[in-house]
Amino acid sequence: METDENLLATIRERASQRILFSQHGVRQMSRPDRMISITDIRMVLEKGEVIEDYLEDPRGHSCLILGKGTGGRPVHVLCSPKDDYLAIITAYLPTEEEWTSDFRVRKKP
Image 1 (cartoon, rainbow, N blue to C red):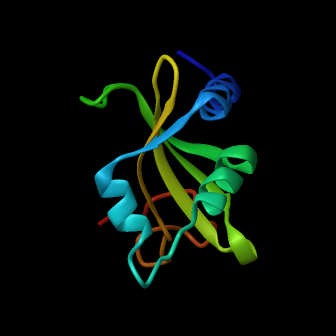
Image 2: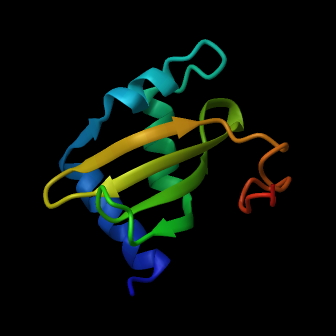
């Protein structure tokens, strides 16, 4: 199993090659209540931390990264490193209704 540090290194390497955004991801980023920019995504990828790792994702290995975007607001990015690019599946602003106050752990339903 890959450590979070190795996974982050792989993600950053793939992001330096190319980033591709899913249609779903673009729709979610563009919502008026979110307005998450490509700059925000890059900031999260460069400085963020893996908070959930999905080894068995049917779309391929993916993970959820927490980082800070413009103005220091918390942003979650769900991404999947591929052979020569990084796929951005979605991005959103976590809420305290669904996450602990540091946005690292999901609250139980």
